[in-house]
Length: 226
Image (cartoon, rainbow, N blue to C red; front, side, top):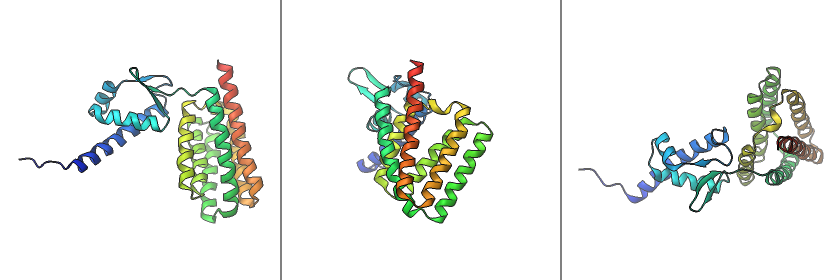
């Protein structure tokens, strides 16, 4: 005779499974497997991931809260299609956040943290030499996220990660051109130099300027494709 599973344990098991499913669908969205505007089929995903529809529905709810999908009554769940206007707003908010990060880190970056960022910058330089845009893109994301993490502000990090995921739906239009990689790498070295100089105002302004330049490149390319 099988023992009954306590409702609380069953709930935890379901939530854990839903989290795994949510991460799998999220990765598929961010990698471009599900294009912006595409409808997500509950039954198809359940079969593909080998789960029932319950965890899929819960994963959809979590993805909706994260801003990666939109749920339309009687129509279904769709990957969010970020507009130019929305992308511009996200970039502006990110610029303000990163200015704060630059100012704070100029006052508190440790020697160990400096060494870690130096290693990241060296890896970015190597990716440029190899003309590996995919590797460079990931290192670029790592560089900025680590700087935010190093502030020790967990709420800031959570909001930052949400914004980056939303921007990823807009695609990395500005990093596909190999000619842009050396300039981008130099910009990151300049940011690091400003932070390690200890001048908070300069470090903050440079980080904000860096994001605004990324905004301009991305939006310009998006407009050119329309």
